[in-house]
Image (cartoon, rainbow, N blue to C red; front, side):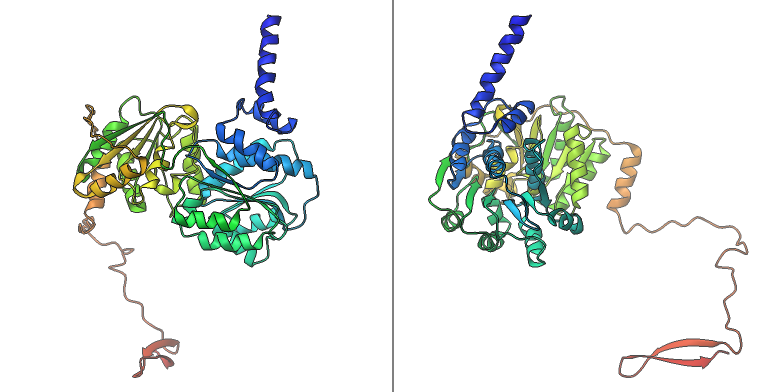
Length: 461
């Protein structure tokens, strides 16, 4: 028994030394080991030593490659080594991300790695109280994770100062471009001290992002872990030909199969996401939904329920296609193909993360989605072959759900009033009309010839 314990200790120490060899302090290695992270990913092996040496980084990596820790760990290590005190309203490090969900995920990772180190971390994003964010920033923070819109609001109101920020990370830069944040990013970069260290990460590298990288980075080390558009090896991609009118029925049938334990369903529009959610709820599935019209609290509740296993299905727009790191997702279903072909890679990247396996299913209507399919195939450099649909169980709706559905589908249905045989004295239809007492003033409103409202007082009666 003692020999087994000794072997286990030696194994743990050798695995921990892999992170130690990258130059990370023991406190970070201890937190990594406690979180079950024993071996660095390829992008971490290359990025961590370079960032510790002060170099700028330009990283092209597919989703789920471990790039979050690749920039988080060296920044934490350098802040710990600096040891200087925080200044009011100043963020020593800024991590800028395009979506709230990605910001929350990075915030959780940073807090996990910074455990018991007395470092201050703040999260600034839309959809939540601004006053809480102002209070957190009042004494200054070590690491600030923010989305561009809300950050610019605080900067304009002088709640946050970036003049002494030493570390700047721009994550998912291509998504920033898609969402129209590039001008905000450039403005934010101009507010940060020029002698900063900058890291830019992107899954794809269009021309606009290349120009942005040239303007932000100083002789960067370029890390390309996989060709652009590469999907994870463990993801099995399937294409089913389904007419639009049958997609909801087929989706409900697929979810009834035993292997579909934890599923994300992607739609193109917010309205489509709500419609799919209502249909699945009536079919009896535990389902949540996130999209841009949902409040941040509602989105976090849905994600929490999905992560905890209380919800089998999460319906989402492409707002969740990046940054949602939920372990154990068995399937990703593209209810509709995305307008931007690159989003397909990020959608299916929600499964098969960190070397795991997963299935990505696309419900494809040839009559109007053929152009989108060809664009996706061009991005992933692979032809998706149509496959035979498996035998699906019949979904039976409850009578109550069907009645509710029929009522909602016919909004012009006349209202049915109950029959009343006799009118009581309390019934408003039998109540006598109110009369103004003599001598009391009644305010009479009228409209003059010029269309303006005029008022006059007159004696009633």
